[in-house]
Length: 303
Image (cartoon, rainbow, N blue to C red; front, top):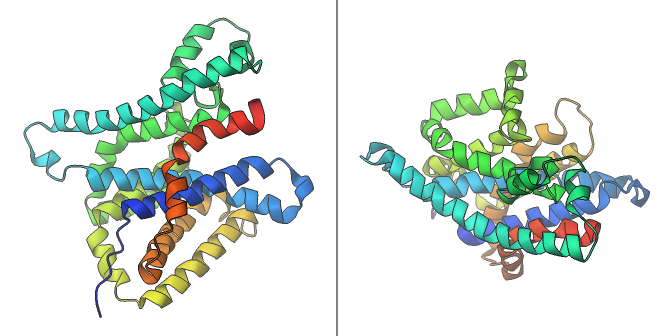
């Protein structure tokens, strides 16, 4: 039987991003509108898995592109600095354009002043500067930009997390501890970024799956592709259902996200391998997902 490479390709990354951004739109549009019925409300709750998907893909992508010999080289700090620097520069070059245009439009055209966004107390300039760097969390000019603080912090933690995830035994132990969160110790990380205690786990899983892609490939190749596709489709459906309908209080909402994320990502990859389809329309949406994330709240809410 020919071996199938189940590693996530750049095209499949864009396809997954497309599903994630559509899930985000559904979540934001319908979560606060129960008048559309329980079914729509449950789907809106499922849509929150989008954050875990984006975080997972970020961890996976960073781990795949991270130079494998960094920790054995002579210029570890320099190599890490330039690796992270490229990612931060790319983010800010995109974010700052939308930030400036959105605030100018909001203040001068749509009545969303800095006082409305940041409060009427002193320190508006300081809050604006912090928001300019994407670090205002839920106090941002656009509340959806809370994610900026989270992802920027996760990127900063990446070199340490990558070093830990390279060993399969250590990575499994760390992932188990992060999921169980004994003594709620992870809540201390909220001082660094909002929701970091929740989303450091899918970020680490993404890194782990990239570091051990060969081992995962060998395991998945022991299963017939069409059967695997069926199992992954069923598993994703069950996990998303459990996320949207709280049948088991200890296994619902955010607790389901790591499982739903992994099963859905592998489902998309397996679907592309089995059907040979390229899903060009979804790739197009995925390529523009960051701009959609940064602007959609202005369109349906503030403006």
